[in-house]
Length: 251
Image 1 (cartoon, one colour):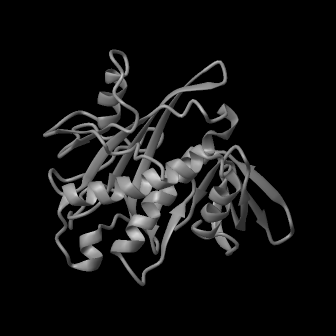
Image 2: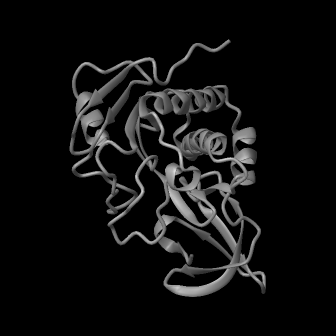
């Protein structure tokens, strides 16, 4: 049986600018053990993908970062880390919100139906084609029931279940499922991770509208490259291989 890596050490902060920034700062000194978690009740400058901010009401949600040292992972396989993290979160949300459609919106947002319940921001440091460290920031909407930001589609576990959740207990449960997927990654099970990721991918094989390089097309997702790029095709068979800034989902 694999020994647990993620969640054996948890440092909780009442407030911080960003758990990712706090974790990166820790890494400049004596490095914490792999799998250490930095959590907070409130981020004053929570970040999402690219330049987006992350809205989270104080004391209502899970906002935390995981410090990892995936030196075993080839640099060109870094998207497999995204897949492992996203799958662990997806499995957790499925356990809490049964009978609803829980999917991974590429690359690593977690959706329930057409609403976003979780965002992930992974910061990798790679030296000479080898991972130095990864900081995995996770924001999961749990007990918040009103959102003030212009984000069009946030949702929380409580909004769908009506339940009030114990955040420290949820953090342990979630870190356990992410840990299981991290061990799968460490064992080199890339094909299994990729298959599970595609099975969980939001909108795969279904026709929808997308903005691709600034123009709108009706297309469907057909897969993901080994580098994590999204593969789409339209009804005439034209294909696109897109990086994050080259495609936008129209929801």
